[in-house]
Length: 235
Ligand code: GTP
Image 1 (cartoon, rainbow, N blue to C red):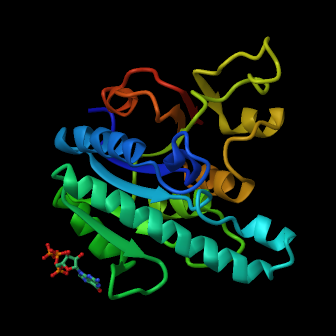
Image 2: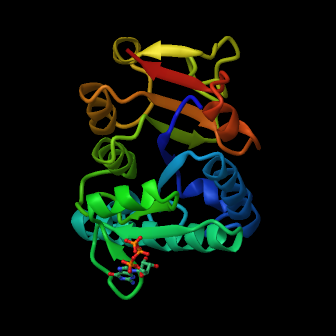
Image 3: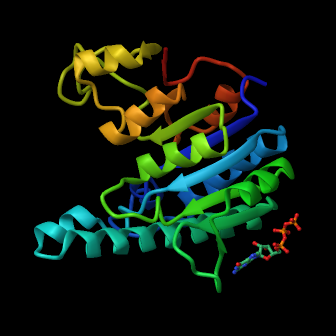
């Protein structure tokens, strides 16, 4: 196996499937099955999900809401998505634990790093909800932070695009996809992989990133087996 412990970052929007809002149960089940597949192969899996399908702090701010207030609402949205994924995984027969950066003891465990690591060692999928628990940080940053804390081998950023391109492939037909790219090149070319806080955290902690299409069945498994899928950001 190429990787033994991974942190999978899913966007909230990806859970919408073809819907305009909320959660598409079919899409959710599809993700659960793919996670189950690699978990059964023995990979230790942690997951961080965004909340943009339910609430976006930045848009709330544009509408006149206090930014910090909006960010906390966004963190709660990630807990809803995390609970949905937890339910889908358990329905598929996968043991899970949900830990939240904001205490909600009636519905999940608080984030305790050492406990999270024990859960992973017992082959439970650990979902981290409520982002970092702080405003002004994205769920990409939360994913990176948790990945470093649990000493994951890699952060997998599941998106709708199948990797990092030299330009926006939807606008520029000549755009080409990178199989691998260095952190320096991403900076130099001004490419967008994650927000800068998250990206810099990865770079400084030598944590590789793989950007890949999570909607393509089997991709997650292929990555675990060392096949070239998406784009690898490395040193
Ligand atoms: P080990 O026994 O250490 O292997 O882990 P465990 O998670 O099975 O032990 P624990 O007794 O802590 O948890 C049993 C169940 O209670 C699990 O489903 C946990 O997710 C859940 N649980 C543990 N702590 C909390 C909490 O603070 N709040 C909520 N809502 N559930 C919790």
